[in-house]
Image 1 (cartoon, rainbow, N blue to C red):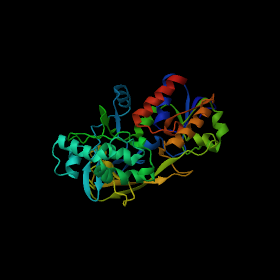
Image 2 (cartoon, rainbow, N blue to C red):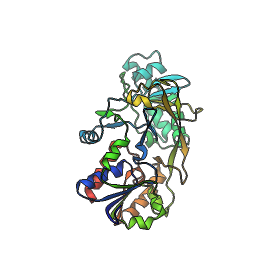
Image 3 (tube, rainbow, N blue to C red):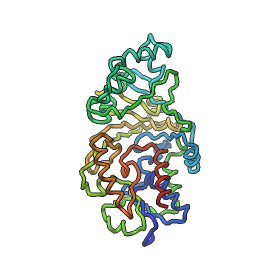
Image 4 (cartoon, one colour):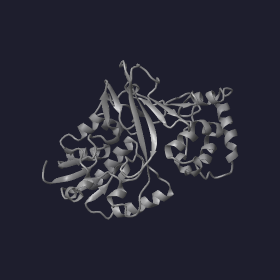
Length: 368
């Protein structure tokens, strides 16, 4: 490790890795510090029983950008995996996103697209002429009450920890409704899973950088700030400023992972559990991301959790109050000369992986 670097990156996730990779191309020296014991942040995958386990929940790479798709394929070969999640409601299985398979399962007398469209319009008519005031009203206006009650309400209330009537309508500005039999969740042109997992991608991106794991930036903040000309911080923005404006809200997750002696537990990589009585939101069966044929299988139950300081923050709660509070922190961030803020925690927003890369490129263009 050197005494001084051009860039210090706080966090070894995809955002930092993308920026560090750009910095290296320009001959810059980079130090990455990471509080966890591994690189790759929440896209970290670990090989267990020959299966690449998504340690922090399912991650499916998808993008409409050929530039981004070509970029990630420089670091790994991607398979043809297509995200086709299934919803389980009272032991009935429904295809997601909402499509003709879903509509016929809910309404057996609906067999044509015209019938499906008419049924949804009939159920949504209760909202005619009204502006949705919350998530429940927004969902009913888009897909009607039957779909809302079975496939949206329980799942969403578990995910966010509050009733749908107390959640902003903006969370589901639109819901995918397909009058076809297409079970592909995403509309993006490119989609897949890296063969061998995601960790290798970040490992290759960070090749040539110095990396310190199990290292907390806040354990010796002044030391780390002094070690580089520029600091890219990807942790929670409110903590960086000692919560001076107040504490931002996040949602957390808890994972229960187990190895099973059977070859195939649920037949799909992701099954959502949409009824409120079941405490987890989904079960992930990791081998199906790479079409595995191993004799055993590994599953993860994903439980939403209330976040408190010290927990891992997964989702920003982008309601009106938190958005306004983040605006105050963003104003403080813009006054910083040495430190720039990036990633889902530093920018307080949800990013898909392709969004993360695009945002990192944008910031790199500004400061490199």
